[in-house]
Image (cartoon, rainbow, N blue to C red; front, side, top):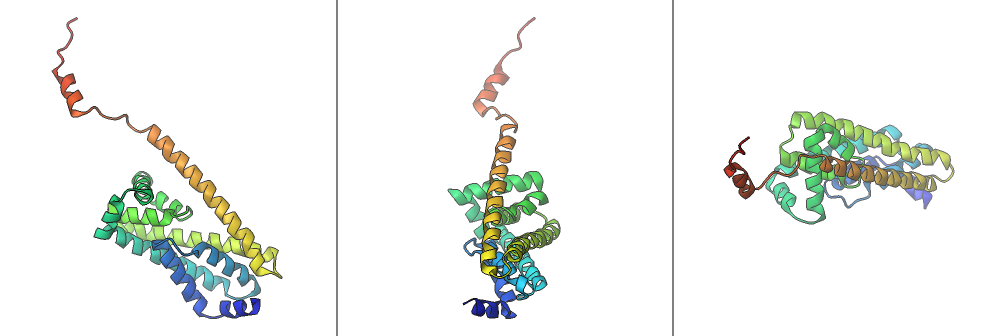
Length: 218
């Protein structure tokens, strides 16, 4: 079985498959693009697929996914999805607040959070985030994400050079653990930001009552 997997990993089509899976997963988070990249990177320790080709394919898929989600966010479909209630609506609302406060930093960090890349890029599109600023951030985030995933897989593959598939397991577990930690920290930061936000303004009726009050004579 390992021989068949190594044969598939040595095919040029593996780079197309990697880029395609990363692209689809970045718009509709349903495919294990992280695990696939880590597994292939662990196999790359043996020479196939080529580490540089895998790095470029994953980064290209990430950038393509960012721009597809950005365009989707600018479309009518993006606005309709943003208005929906539930988990998706809450995620997009939180992403919009993050992008509004931190701009490109939020887009960059979102690539390393579970579902954060899709939410942040959709929010950037629906908010009208300038494309000239979005493009360089997307490229930088895609390269860093690809380096990170390939690095996790390569570390495991080097530790278990004789069993590269087993070597992918520590990278997947470590990547998931780091993602959870980052998600928890992001939620805590969002709560602190909400707690220190401006106090709620008075309603119309309350403002009218205040305006009608006469000044107290001294």
